[in-house]
Amino acid sequence: MARVQLIDVKKIYQGKVTAVHDFNLDIADKEFVVFVGPSGCGKSTTLRMVAGLEDISEGECYIDGVLVNDLLPKDRHISMVFQNYALYPHLTVFENMAFPLRLDKSLRTIPWTEEEKAELEAKIKKLEEAGDEKSKAKAEDLKQKLEKGHVVKGYTQDEVFEKVTEAAKVLDITRFLTRKPKALSGGQRQRVAIGRAMVKDCKVFLMDEPLSNLDAKLRNQMRAEIILLRKRINTTFIYVTHDQTEAMTLGDRIVCMRDGFIMQVGTPAQLFDMPDNLFVAQFIGAPMMNTFNTHLLENGGKYSVELFGVKIPVDGEKGKALAEKKIPSQDILLGVRPEHMTLKLKKDASSIPVTIKVSEMMGSEIHVHVLTQDDTKIIVRMPTLNMSEEEKAAIIPGQEVFLSFESKAMHFFNPENEKNLLAGPNAVNSKGPIILPGEKPQEQKEEEAPLCGPEKSEEEK
Ligand code: ADP
Ligand code: MG
Image (cartoon, rainbow, N blue to C red):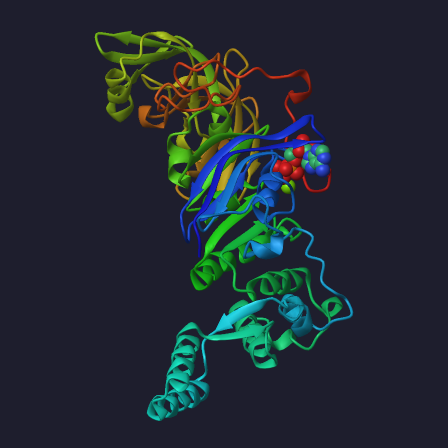
């Protein structure tokens, strides 16, 4: 259990490549924080700086109030699970899990057993009864020892047994304890790797893409297990993933990163409902948020957007928020998530005509790709459950249909810096570093040009 603080942390590889810029984050005790972002955005680098596997080039990292910049990984009280969970092939599951405990020869203080306690107390009583100065001093000594606990080197056999069997029980791998890794499936091996990290008492549990090597079905299952595991371990977690679903389902808070910069920190709901910028808006949610190049019109405190000759009023909460911030009329990028749009066969006052290009049947929903009059590509997620046969039959390429959405589904971005017009003053641009009001934008050096390209799938890496 521990609070983790990262203050202006920077990573510069080989004195030139800045992989992480001024990373600031305060993680509460027992919080589950997820770092998410495309491949190469600096997630692993940041995690490895917390673990002590990478030097911190600049800035400070505190674990439980202790500055750890110069501490070795073993002295930071962390446990780590990697994507490539290398298990020892010649050791049983039990011994694989016991390994970190057997390796640990550090001095630890553990509570006395009841018997030891009774024995010590009897000794103290005897010494006190003796009454002379020397015995009194010795009794005092023993009393302190009794209070402090038992100093031992490493873990006893009993402790190893207890910790490994307890972790195995939590992970439901007790029946495999005597097997060797090669006799396990991928998911079972991953559980052993998690178990190996669990057995050590740690203040912070670090996980770097622990599910990336598993197939989709197993990944979903393990994701649910990590939620349960988190409840049982009840410690501070930092979890790295490029998968927004994992981030959304696991995190108390999500740190969305790009090119070594934090783009937004917030709860899953905050990132989904009020993304600070277009990057976060399109990284969180799948398929990604649609955008239209359009104009926001303000008239006497009332707002509307015009799309292909159709004037759509912006009323309700969104209209109120725009008015409160006194947002003037301007060109915008209008964002609407695919699941917040509907397609209809009949036109109504605020729907816009589109043409179906492709439809992807997903079972419970259909992803319909449509084109607007100016060839903007839009994806609409339509649940199939309440769709009529007539509607299903109409979803064919070439069909003209009518697209509509409510104003509460709208997001308004500045087309220049891609910042959400309704985000707070400290929100980050999609196109650059954090710029606080009154601060000059930081210069980007040539070699610091974007470090990450489009998201790569696991196979491409
Ligand atoms: P992520 O985990 O988000 O995919 P990383 O933290 O691994 O990203 O990498 C961030 C950036 O730092 C990338 O551009 C990567 O190429 C670079 N990088 C990572 N490790 C090293 C290294 N040892 N030396 C030089 N550059 C590195
Ligand atoms: Mg990584």
